[in-house]
Every structure is written in structure tokens, then in C-alpha cells.
Image 1 (cartoon, rainbow, N blue to C red):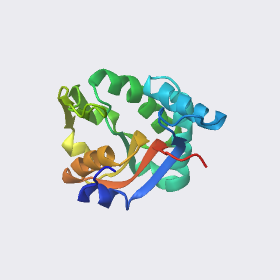
Image 2: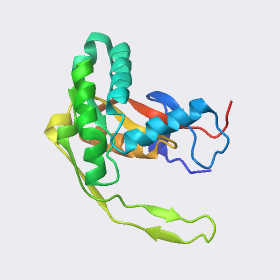
Image 3: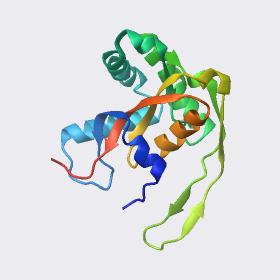
Length: 188
């Protein structure tokens, strides 16, 4: 089981909304509903399915915040590279904000490079390290703002918590997190 640090634990106490149950590929014999959810997640990650996911997200934003949605900054947890981040989130974030009335945080966060990732291969237990990703924030924009973060998949919450805590250090108030899918391992 993955270790969870204190920052992540604190973020688990914030408002969390996930739209779909996401079953990793290693979970075999899932039903049609689970296959459809996987396809939506994969299509979204590949830059497709923006409209469908944007409409779901905007609906939840409006339902949760009502008329106060106009004061909420919608900010996506950056993807692993500049290219993937733009493909996945640029048009999506703009569309969510167009549909909901929220403030688009995408133009105020820039990503360069690729994410630092340490992967442990299960069979031989070797670790490999890949390239570094740098995230720059428009500090003045986020200071004093209520921010709702969005990420594609919620598994441990570490990525969301790390991103949100950086925004908090800039003076933002993280009001919650929306996730397209939440990793699930048991079919019920």
C-alpha cells in the first residue's frame, strides 16, 4: 500500500468529487460500464472527450457553488509534460469556464520539461528516473483566490495535494478537487 504524507491526508479532508470509477487495466473481466468509463478516461488523457467531460465538470461546479461559481478559479493539476498538459487541459479548462462561469486558471500556470518520475518495476525491483518537470505560477493571480483543482485520476491524492499545497503557499484557498475518475480495484 502506498504511503500517504501529512499534506495528502489534509487534502483528503477537502471536498472531493469524482465522476467515474476507474479500473486499472490489470483489473480483468470488468463489465461494459467499466469499459466505457476506461474509454472516457483514456480519450480524455489523449485530448479527446473534452466536451463530454467539460459538461460534466461545469454541471458539478454550478451545482456545488451556485452563483458563487463566478468567484472560483478552476485550475487543472498539470500533466507530465508541456505537450500533454496543453493537449489535455488548455481547451478543456477554457470550455469548463465558458459553461460554468468559473475563472480559467490554465493561462496562469506554465509547465516546462517532463515530470520527474521514479518507477519501480515490479518483477525485478529496479528503479528508473525520468526527466524533470517545472511548474511556474502567476503568483499575483492566485493570491487570495478560491481555487478548485481538477485532475484526471484520483488514486492516492498525492499529485493533487502537492499541487494544491503549492497554490496555498501562494495565498490561494483550495476549496476542493474534482476528478474524472477515482481508481477502484473491486468490482461491485
